[in-house]
Length: 364
Image (tube, rainbow, N blue to C red; front, top):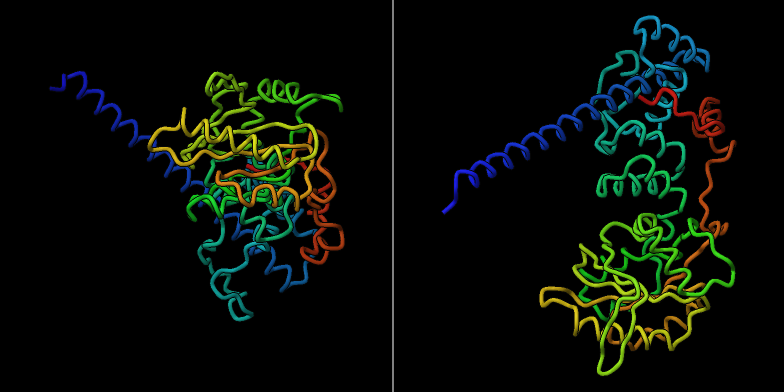
């Protein structure tokens, strides 16, 4: 029988949850209203410029007049007005806009395609990503995982979109289809460990210790869902002792994830060793409700054909990925829009100025 204290705790928990949900809805509502306002201002500027033939000077003049009308507000700086213009141009699909409706300046709803994110996040997405489909991918990931603006910037600059799901795996042959797809997307190639400062001749143990010392950044690079279990995790198999380099549990996949670190190129025998570890973990650690454990050989480099052959007939789900301890190579670097592209797309120099100075002033 529950005590009065138990009933009170239930009441307290219920009220706290209601307050948190109300605050969340309130924040979403405020963000949506602000985005709608900024989108409409950007639309008005674009339509007037097209209709009247106005150039850049109208934004500077409008900013000064708005500052006089709304003193103390930073949201209407010339920089931020230019961002609003870019915001509208990135999401122009609303109620039909034609020559007949331009003079009316009606107020359509915010396009459904606009992600409801804080304005600062949208500024990052607009000025760091030129391809709409990639921008939508990062926006969706930000909403799903609750990334702060600094985390979003980190993910963009580390080229997460290009690396996600690129590890070589045998998941399609060893996991149910639903879990296979999720597991594939949980891995990437290459992993970016640019936060490590290691000598070129560093051993596996050196890298392992450096990663665990930087566990927060390591987990951020691994991605959402990874929970750290331990390093040099001890397994007793028969009369022998074995030690797993890094052991994790994935909260979405509901399984253990083994990482075997190598400082050289992938070799076929590494898959055999990982297969042994997976069998041991499934037998000794896996709960009946857990899914099959997954293994990753994380090496300095690999030959994709060799890796695919090595994994082909393995019965346990495993993958092969590489890691980088320095700057990301050119093929994984995204490019900001160049000057010609920006001029052709936006026909406005303020965007170019923002790319140059990355000013955050006026993003409120």
